[in-house]
Image 1 (cartoon, one colour):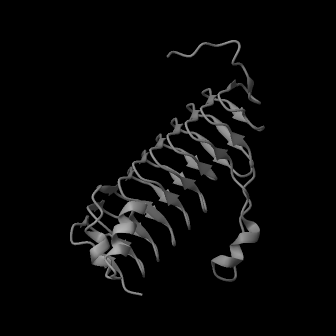
Image 2: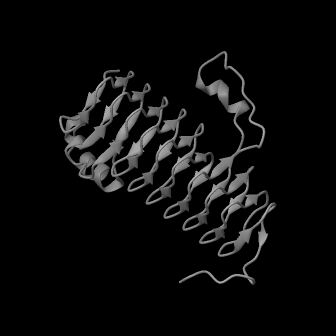
Length: 233
């Protein structure tokens, strides 16, 4: 499969592109970035796809010119095989994404952030510098600097003998951060836990149980303190 690189894309020095890469729309890729096989950068919105399909063509260049929002990948980034970076997103320098990650539109990710295998960060999310993100992050959520979202506090690592389908049995379910939640500086969310819609996890908290929607939790382990604090409006 050949690569498709938009004529509107701009790439820095020493950028590596794997096989089957699609770069759509006004994309900027910083120096020293690695893009793995079958990655899409500038992934389109459903409305753009609908317009493309109505044209009755399978010419990827036609879809390319429907993409309007610019996408930025910072210098010295790593984007693993099979990943999708949506149009309008911005990845800071030193970004490190493992295989099959997804980043939604209008999402801003800070510097030196790592997304673990199959992590999904959806639309209009803000991720601070130095975060490690596994699992799922819903729309309009915010992760402060140095947040950790981990499937397990002890990471299991095995070298696969076969291609990606053989990895499924070693992946660990990650946390689920629902829409509008805020995770404060340095907080840790461990295991297949859900942090509910519009909830607030205070800085430094360690979440080991589900957090209810619109709750406020803090401490280690994190507990509800909603009746003890008043957040600024």
